[in-house]
Image (cartoon, rainbow, N blue to C red; front, side, top):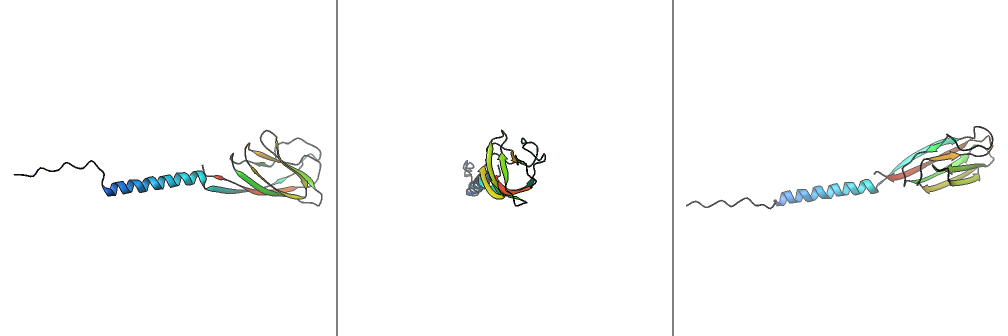
Amino acid sequence: MAVPLEPPSSRPSHRTRNRAIVVAVVVGTVVIALFTVPVTRSFSDEVRNPSGMLHLPGPGATLICPTGSHVWGTFSVNGTEPDTFVILDLDQNVIYLDNSTYGSFSFTASNPPYTFWLPYFGPEIVYVSGHYSHPIL
């Protein structure tokens, strides 16, 4: 008399289950890393007052960075006279203002892009450099 065959188990094997767990952990770790690991980028530019008198902000040195980025940097005037250095957001709100020969700034980007501006007469050139960091996604 023949012994009846057992039906195949509907439960996955240990090997299949372990592979699925490993894949889920790896995918979860990658997704978390994409939203939390920061990427840092550098920027540098020169800012001038092209008209030599009080003027409204216009096209010029601009920083385009993602919303939520942490931005930090420095500025320095190429001469010995202080100059008024201003950082404006998209709506022309003042984010940073200093009248000096050098300084540093730091802010969280909430309304990019940002314009670097010299509102008053001055022959100086202002050098701006810095970094911004943001998550990959």
